[in-house]
Image 1 (cartoon, rainbow, N blue to C red):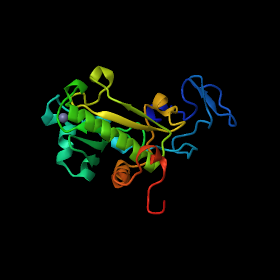
Image 2 (spheres, rainbow, N blue to C red):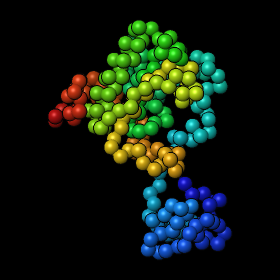
Image 3 (tube, protein in one colour):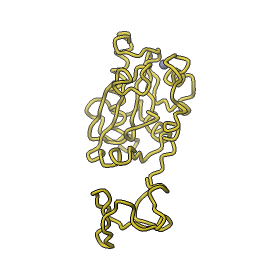
Image 4 (cartoon, rainbow, N blue to C red):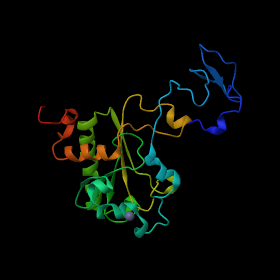
Length: 224
Ligand SMILES: [Zn+2]
C-alpha cells in the first residue's frame, strides 16, 4: 500500500515520521509501525496481498452505463456458463452467484432472473425462491467453510449502498470471529484468501449434498 509518493528521496523515514528506533519501529501520524522504515528495495516483514480482480472495480469497467437490463450484469450472467459467470446454483425464479467484489470468502448474491430493483416489485414466487436459496446458501457455506455467523441483507437504492441498484440482490456474507480487522479501515481493502473460481467450484459441488438445517455445520464428503 506504499507507493513511490510515500518514499522520500533520502530513503529515510517518511515525512511526518517520529523518531526511528530499530527495536520498536517508527511512529507515523501517531501510529506505531512495528518494523523500522526501510528503503523500497529492502525485503521487509510485511506480507503482500494481491487482489488483481479488484482492478475491474477500481477501473470501473464493470460498472453499468445505465440502469437498463441490457447493461445489467445480473441479467447477463444467466446467459453465460456457470463457471464463466461464477454461478453456484440456478433456481426457478432466482439464482445464486459469487459476488465479484466480496467482503469475505464465500460472499454470495441471490438474484431474481427478472430485472426488478425493489423487494416490493418481486413476485411472491421470487420472494419465496430468494428466501429458500438464501437459507440453502447458508447451509452450503456452513458445510464448506464453517463461518461463525452471517450477514444477510439487501441494499435498496444507490444511497443505501447498492452497487447494482437496478437489479435486486440479496447478500449472504459469511463472518468469522476476528474477520473485521484494520484492512478495510486503513487500506480500504478486504483480504480474500481464496480465488472466486475455486470458491464457486466448492460451493456448487456441495449445493446438492450439504446437510440441511442445523446439521449443516458438519463437514461434507464421502468420509463424513
Ligand atoms: Zn438486471
